[in-house]
Amino acid sequence: MDKKNKPKRLKLFDLQKEGKGISKNQAELAPGLKKFFVSYFRNFNKLVSVNIFMVIGNFPLIFLICNLSGYFKTPYSLPFSDLFQNISGIFSADGNFTPYKMTLYALEGLQHQQLANTAVNYVFYGLSALTLITFGLVNVGTAYIIRNMVSGEPVFVWSDFWYAVKRNYKQAIPFGALDVGILALLSWNLYSLITSTSQFFSSMLFWSNVVLFIVYFFMRYYMYVQMVTFKLSIFKMIKNSLIFALLGLKRNVLALLGMILAIMLELLLMFGTGGILVPFAVAAPLAVLFSMFAYMKVYAAYPKIKQYMIDPYLEEHPEEKPEASADEPIMKDDVTEKERLLEIKRKNGLI
Image 1 (cartoon, rainbow, N blue to C red):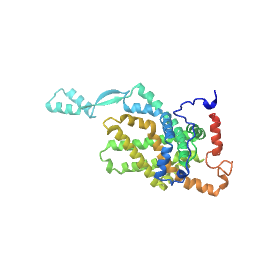
Image 2: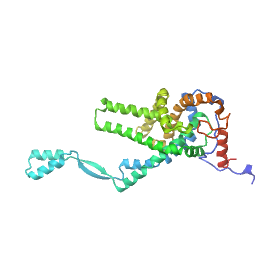
Image 3: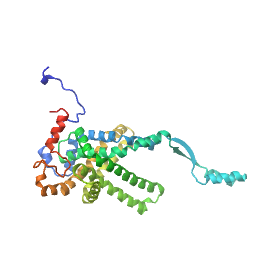
Image 4: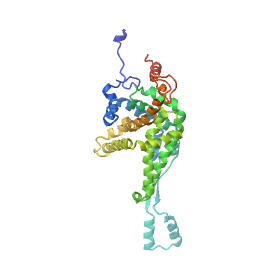
């Protein structure tokens, strides 16, 4: 059969298919809200694939969610008051029950339900600890893909993901574990302060933790983008991220507001539509929500990184521009874009 007349197979998720490219008008747009929406919807299909990477790559978190839900735990009853055991012992030894004693016994003996861990829960906790390994790898792979989308470079989702992981895993694994630890610590601090007192809004410790959490959240916009772009130590990446969190405060806040609006929309779909749109609310995190957040963060971060780190260096060292030299530049993409695309196409049988 002639190749021209050969029927084409239907491919719903072709991760290696080349995109349409960027039109001249799109390339000339200023890095504002208009360009964000144009670029986002132009890369929407690829961002769905990125979201799938995030969900599947961080599968250990599913075991943690199962544990937190309490589904596999064993329920038991426990008195609200810590004094109940002492009072019960005293009354039993005394043997003389009066209406007052019985009332006190009943009030102090009010029960509430608690959940005890089972063997399944401990196994799930162990499996969820794998997040310490997968978290950094997934973030570095997806950060590289989204950075290329924001900068207007060609993107091959599958190949680019593993390209970034192979070149950054030595930093991504320890930094990902550190990142998870800091996020867990800050989140636990806020949760403890909120649940331990009703006066948390007037607590200086609470607001100090809120500020720390927001600053670190802004720093995370820049960490993984730097990791896939430059050859820097973890300490320098954290230091630079703190500086960028303040330099790019306006863009950081706008991205945060965008994420808050997306979460509010998700909650509206889940609880505010009488159950009609609940399937869409459940599907959103699995399909688009996490990659949308990541895209907002990288879109806010990359222009500042380019302005203060990439452009000044290339102006001082024009010989290290990718098109002018084949030597290894400061940027971690250690081959030219043309060579990288040829390697990807050759590996996937496209040429």
